[in-house]
Every structure is written in structure tokens, then in C-alpha cells.
Picture 1 (spheres, helix red, strand yellow):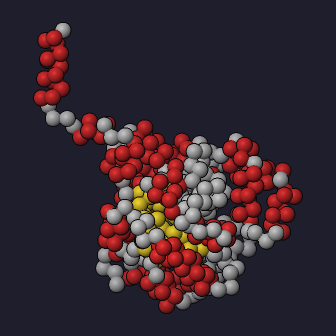
Picture 2 (cartoon, helix red, strand yellow; picture 1 turned 90 degrees about the vertical axis):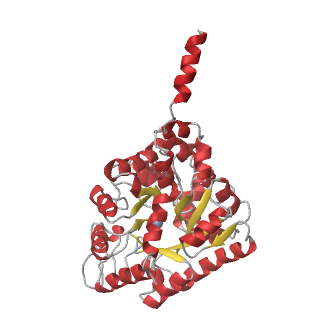
Picture 3 (cartoon, helix red, strand yellow; picture 1 turned 30 degrees about the vertical axis):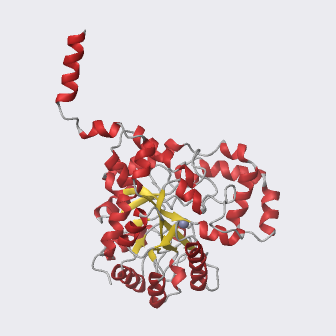
Length: 403
Ligand SMILES: [Zn+2]
């Protein structure tokens, strides 16, 4: 017995452990803490403005995110979405007000969060354990057909622009319009896709070093972008069409094209983009609470906040039709199996969505994704790429040879 133990001891320690052995000793929480976690899409700025609350307060139960909870969830780099819908009369001005609101928070909390302009400043912030904040402008309508306004938004720290939201612009058609059964808007040239001016905008973004975001755009716009861009693109918050076939999700040929372009697909957590059954169950729920929903809308709040308030009131009912975390993981796995581990990341859409898979209740819950990746057998190196490395690679590529 003793001899056997000695032999076992010699066998175990005489050969160098393979790197995998070392990884097994790291807990998922260690891996999560050591990784640079980048979320490419969070709508909390709009939420704080609409609800009259401030990001450096404890907003548990009110929003998905606040400053301390972002930190608690291990978020190192946050792209804050700057959004208004296409009906806003002065969207550019509105964008600046949203940016000012984060500016005020950053000025008041210099030890916790800092607005950064590039990947170098981002790394400095991460090393100082501060949240590195970029802006992502959601919807080309925010630049009001003016390249000078695009430049201004870049100067304020915008490092991606989503070419369309659900509304099209005169220079790019959205997924919603391109798939509308009838009467979907066309571009100024009377067709789907990017117009000549749309191509100029993509070129200008490439020159500035602002990532082109293809979430929300229609398929024709997508393929026009791929043919036009000289830099890798992102889908800041889009999931997989093959699993959940809604117009906003990306088809496999689009995912392959993004990989070929060197870009990245940041998976959206919205239940309706994760599970094909979700929308129908949600519609039934809303129908059952129609009068309550109508009175909320009549009070002047927007349709998304109304839904969110109803969901918060009837949590048990809503819980029954939220997708599982595993269903979300299948979207990540699908991209990896299709094109490899270098082209997928996280674009939660927290605070822009009324429902996420079970367990993903707010920004403090990101570690459960890391845990699921560990359980699926991905290496620490791969997990680091998924949690942020891939998006950082694309950001750096966009910075190279830019102004
Ligand atoms: Zn969106």
C-alpha cells in the first residue's frame, strides 16, 4: 500500500501538469473576476431619465443596473446605449442630454467609473478597478442626416453606432421595415439597404474608428454594410435566428459573414429573442391584463415601461414563461459551433428589455453565465474571449489607422 502510494506520488508529480489541470483549480468566480467583462449594450441611461432616478443610487427593483451592481456583477467595460425612438423631434440633442447624464455620474464617482476614449484608456481604467464607460448610439436617426453630428458624437465618446433602430432612416432600412408585410419604409433611393449616403456614413465611421453596429438593421442593409466596411463590425445586441426565428436575430449566413469580416456577435438576453415560445405566451399575458396595460399607457409612460411594470407586479406568472439560462447558452454555443469561439460575446440589452432568462435578473447575475461556460467545458482562455476579449479585439481593429 505504501509502495503504491509512493509510485502514485512520483507519477503525479514527476510529470508537468498540462495547463488544463491548472485551470481546473480556478473556480468560475475566479475566472469571472479575472476576465475583462465587456457588455456592449445597456439601456440604463434612458431608464434613469424616464424614471427620474440616478445611476449612483441603489436602484435594485427599479432598474437592471446601477453603479454598485455593475461592479458587483464584475462588469469592467460598459457600452452605455444612447437611444430615443424615431419620433423624437430633436434626437441629436436628446443624445447629448443622455450623455450628459452619465457625465455627471462619472464626475461624481471618479473612483468607480470613468468615460474612456480608446482601448488604452479602457485598460488603464480596468487596472484601476473602475468601470470603463463608452457610449453606443442606437439608431442612425440620432445624427439627423449630418456627418458633422456623427463626428460630434464620436468626440463625446461614442465608439459604435447602431445604423438603425426599429425605424429606418433615409439611408438605411431596418429589420422591422424590411420584413414588414406591406408598407415597410425604403431608403431615399426607393429600395432596401444602404443608400449612397449610408455608404458614406459607414466610410466615415471606419475613418473615425467608430464600430459599425448591425443589430436592428435589415438583411439588405447588413449585406450592403459587409460590402462597404473596411473594418470589423459588431452586432451589439443580437441573438441567433436558427434558434429563435425573429427578424431581429441573425441568420447563419450573416453570422458566417461577420466572422469572415473579423467582427463579433454580442448575444442579446431578451427572452423573446432567446425562446421561440416566449412572444406568444407574453401576448396572452398582456391580453389578460389589457385594461391595466391600457391605463398605464394612458398615463403617458412608454409601451416598454408599461410592460415592465406589469411584469414586476405579476412575477409568478411571468416566471412561468421566461426561458432557461441553458436556452440562452445555446445561442452562444451555436455561434461557437458555427464559426468558432472568436466571434461571440455578451450584449445583454439590460434595462432595454422587460424579461431575460431565469436567473438573469439584473447585472449582478453575469457570473452564472461564466459558471455555465465552465460547466460546458470551455477553457479559461475561451471564456475570456467570450466575456470581453472578442469585443476588445474588434474595438482595437477599429482604432487602427483611424483619425
Ligand atoms: Zn436595441
